[in-house]
Structures are given as C-alpha cells and as structure tokens.
Image (cartoon, rainbow, N blue to C red; front, side):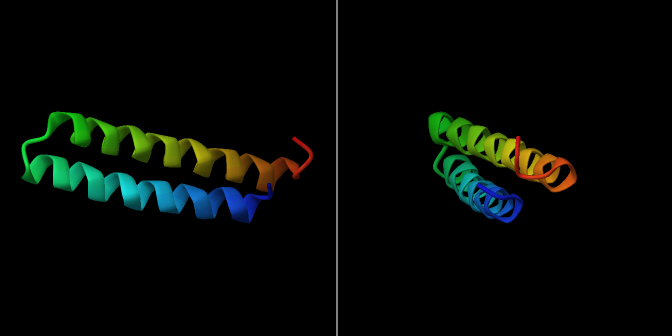
Length: 60
C-alpha cells in the first residue's frame, strides 16, 4: 500500500471511530465508546505509517 492509501484508511478509521464513540456516549454504552476510541487510535497509527512511507518511500 502506498502513502495515499494508508492516509485514506486512516481518515476512514478516525471518522468511524468518532461516530462510534459519540453513539456510545449518547447511549451510555461504554463498550461502544471504547471501541470508537480504539478505532481512532488505529487511524492515527495508519496516518503515521502513511507519513513515514511518504518520507522514506513505499519500500518499507
């Protein structure tokens, strides 16, 4: 996967995680809220991975 693909997936995970977290808060569902936070962290990791690929190249 290239830099753009990683960053696109990161954005999707951040958005989906944010929605899950919000629904979890609104419905007082701690499990869904935690799942949303975890998904946002996954997106942040993918974003970092994409940035590193952009800096070092797609070979990594």
